[in-house]
Length: 415
Figure 1 (cartoon, helix red, strand yellow):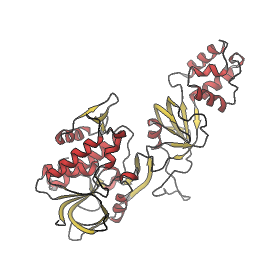
Figure 2 (figure 1 turned 120 degrees about the vertical axis):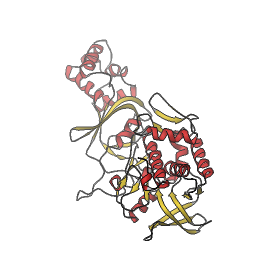
Figure 3 (figure 1 turned 180 degrees about the vertical axis):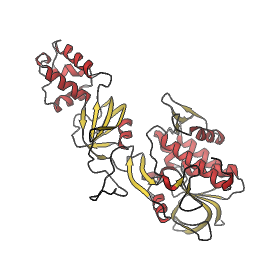
Figure 4 (figure 1 turned 135 degrees about the vertical axis):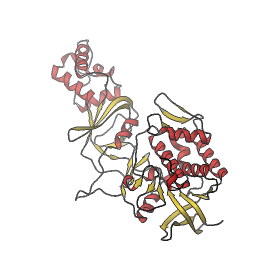
């Protein structure tokens, strides 16, 4: 195989494949090489959305660019009632297979078991790319343009181990601190008695008295942490750990130290404070116990847990409760408070918070502002969106724009 290409792409995930397909659809004469360190391309994509492949969301900006790409690639999609866009087959692996076949049919070369260990900008133009195969073979490829689309650090089992950040730094780029995000959150308080409980609630994150996040959704209680989509979205807002002199720490590999925040869970979000107090007062007069007073509002494990936190006897007749007690129970139901102890680590995080600084990238073309001919797309950049297809949409969009830019002369680039 000749080792000189027009375009080299590090990473055969959504961004890399979108770039390869886009570039070769525009210029059939291009020589495109896609290097993937895993034994098969797009393993993380094939497992996304619990295997269903939540590809995008109707609320994503520039989603039409992504939907047009799917249409041209022959991928049928549909949206659910929440706006999440899935392949019509609801099989993520089929999307990965279609894109790989499409790229190869257009003429791209996809090399698996090929890890990009280093890349150097050639003073004469282009790049030298150093590749190590699992068979121990070392190769050097040359390319006029290089796209780094290696993903982040989450789900390392699928190949995301932070390789792109090392390459970016070696090529002169700055990388924002890497933090596991969209993940479960550990708490200082014991969750004994709540394991396995799921409940609809409103979650708020408080920092120094201000609400910095609020969302309704299902909260899942695990043995040692809180989970559920609203909790995972909240995890992105937890402060980044800092060193003693106030600087942000780099590449936080596991859980964060205790942030100065409080998690407030409103277990009865459809009640106003006054409405809840009135309901509790009325029911307290109906010859029920304190436990029975709360159990029709929230599930028994949650009711027992809240009363225990309030140091109240659940067996006590509710009729003996004074107004102060009623208000205390109402506050316990509306403001179940936890202290975040840290995020779960990389094994559970869906995405990486942090990455190559966006101000060092032309977001219309994804080209580096530091080195001409160098491009970035996908999770390797400093973007992390909420659950629901936003992060995959970002990968598709970045790959499409990079592929378009790499395939055309600077004056011809479509913005």
